[in-house]
Image (cartoon, rainbow, N blue to C red; front, side):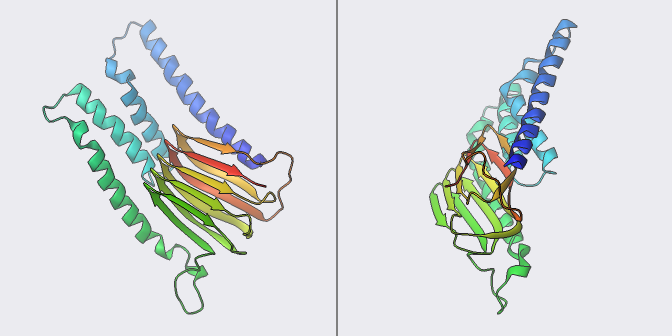
Length: 238
């Protein structure tokens, strides 16, 4: 749990530093009587900067940074150069198309991701050992029973996912990739698991409701990795 807290503090420090830097530059330029366009300090520009920083941190992988940047850019262009046909009218259909293409490409690229976990007959990875959950405008509840869980991916877009690992077990370090946009993911894990979070949150949050004071068992580390935009992740144990 200490690893999780240290990572969370580091992430909060990064965004706090960025905010203070921007505020300081704003007041410095105003003190110097330098005239700046109003749109430079608009909420649209804030989204663009946040999306760009997300992309840098994730090496521009995933769709989270692109969605945030695209939303800000569309509204900003409409404010700076108003079009008679209004760009914002086409924003949501375009974003849905982009998300659809992203999910298709993501699914295809991840098929060979776990080649070492195929069945003896050479089939697909065992469903209990490798988790692949996608929830779009829907809910998905799953209890994982595998005693040799290998990781996987969770996608929640305008949906909710509940994963129960209380009857599962892991060996060593496993990674659970998460892509959350306007959605929520709830994880229930055994108390003796260690959880490390490497999730970028933009207008979202991660809440760790596990009991304090329980020492994780060595060799059982669950790494949460990915992005959470306008959504939330909740972790708890019994």
